[in-house]
Structure formats: structure tokens, C-alpha cells
Length: 422
Image (cartoon, rainbow, N blue to C red; front, side, top):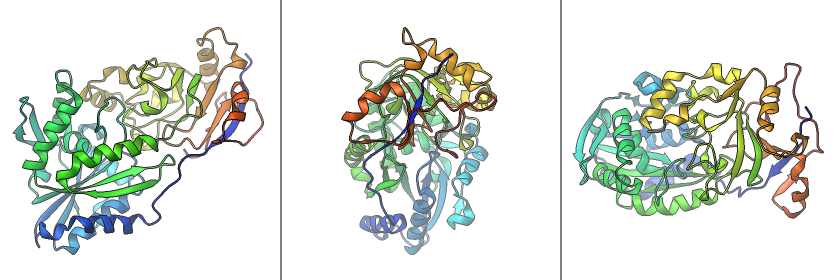
């Protein structure tokens, strides 16, 4: 079969970034005047999540040092729902891969999946909270603010989600996701968030917003009484700065790697356009990918292939890398079992592309619109097929880096990654 020829292009996104992350964290924390609340000898639990947040080690270490400067006793709590296989050991391992260890952070790391119920909302929902964090004198919430991959609201993924899902652990994550069947996402977010702030001695938050290059663009310390107001405003910025595919339609999207460090669903559905339906774009999506082929899992995801069911095709090495138990726990907890379904697998990438293009309708394979990306977090440099060439002239945000070239299958029949190492 003849394949489409591919062109390397570079996208130009808003590149604002913070040059000195620790200095900005320290300056922002100073605005909270935590010394008025944190007394010498008091403990402060600092949350650490499971997403691949840029500079997360530096951000948390600076928060630890700030608490120490007040005479407080900081410790770190993994806040990642059911990730890491729903075990404390698994969650500690995830943090180790981000460089978050007691030695590097200069404080204890207290991990447990045990929670206590601190309250019940007006809807009767039990509010679960991490046992270790519940025993602290104060809690500092650290989280990246960005659009959620499945839910839509004024608040999506950020400080509130860390309080609910992150610190709610496996039990909290299960009950809140189940509650979404009866109540709106915002009803649950606001009710549980208010309860946690009131009952669990939340002293403040560090909101992080990244640019489209996976760099820290904004850091803001937020007092607990302004969590809802500021997170709503920061989410708008996060949506504006989100990386995007170079074109809103493709016959085949090839994703070099997916994983939990990239997105909650392995591939960000805000980018690939399947936020409301796993296998087809809806009228509410701005991107339409007819078929998706995932070529691999990231090392950092540890076999958690949540979101693999969103794709139609994978290769055999990706299928072999899936930890089905860990993936099932995460997807069932999130009430998204279809995200764990295994797509059609072929031994080589050539076989996958051949069969995938034959399911794209009347378009002949060489004329298909194909986009190949490293992952949904790194979209600055991608490959697009020759069929997009007529659209280049009207795009000032695209730089053509190569002439059309044959798809780069090696002797075994596998493609090269767009960017080596991603």
C-alpha cells in the first residue's frame, strides 16, 4: 500500500514562562502571610499529585522551606486518588520518579490509602480525607489548574480536584465519581470543597498554570476563601494556553506515547476531541480525529493505560506494556470502564497504519490527512501529511521544517518517534 508523505512542522504558541520558579513560589507564598496562622512546631501537610507537572519538585521543596522558615513542621502527602494501583507504595513510587523523596524535599513523606470521613454534604455525600493530612495542624494544597478530560464546569482540574479526588484517595474518588450520576460536577466540587476547607484546616493553595510548551507560565498563592473565585479565573487562562493539534480534522492521529503523566486519560481529550464520546467527536468538540493509533506508553505511567480505550488501534508492544489490573482500578474508580478497553493490536506500526487508513472512508491512503504527535502535552513539533500542504499559506503560526518525505518505517516495520526521547 502507498502511504501519505509526511511533513515536519513547528507550531508557535504563547511562550510566556516563569524564569525563576523557586523565587516566584517563595514570593507568592509570602503574600499569604502564613506566619499569622502557622505557629512554631505546628505541622503542615503539603500535597503532591501524580501528574507530570513541570518543576513540581522545586515547587514543593520551596513550599517545604517556607513552612520551615515559619517554624512549622512540613510533611508531604501523596494526593492522587486511586493512582499507583490504589496502594501507598505505588503512590510513593510515582513521586520518586518526579524527584519527590524525603531526602530531596527535606521532610517526611507520609503515605497511606486510609481516609477518615470528616463531614457529609447537603446531598448526603461522605467527605473522605487522607488520614495523615487530617492529623496535620494545617494543609497546603498544591495543584496544576487545567481543563478536565471528562467534566465541564467553572472549575475542572486543579485545587478543588486535589482536595476531593487527590486527598479523598481511592474511597473518596469512588464515591465522588459515583455521585456524578446523580448530581452535577459543579454541585459536587463546590459542596465537598467547602466542607474540606472548613473542616480540614486548609491554610492556602499554590495554583500552577502551564503554557503550551509544558512550561510553568503562572504560579499563584491562593487563600482558601478565594479558591473557587481564583480557580475559575485561572482555568480560563489554562484553556487559552492549552496546546493544540495543528489542524482540527484528521483521518488518522498517531500518538507516539500516552500515560498518566501526560493526562488523566493518557491522552488529553481537550486536545484530541473525544471529551464526550470515546470514539467520535461530538458537536461540543472542536477537534475531530476519525481514527487514533497509540504507539506506546510512557515509562512514568507504570503500565497504567487509562484512556487506551479511546483509541481504535495499538501495536503489540503497547498491548504487552499494559498493566490491566492497575488500569482497571483507575478506570472503574473514575466510572469510565470503556477507557480500559483494549483496541485492535497489530505486530508492527506498518500493519496498524495500513489497516487504520482502510477504515477512513473513500479517501485514498496517500491522500489521507494524518497527524503524528509525540503526546498530547508536547505539540510544538509534529508531523502532518502532504494533504494539509494547501492550508499552510494561510497559517502564520506554522513553520514548515521539511519537504514531504515517505513515512519513516524501519526494517521491522515500525515508525520513528516524532521527537526522540518523548
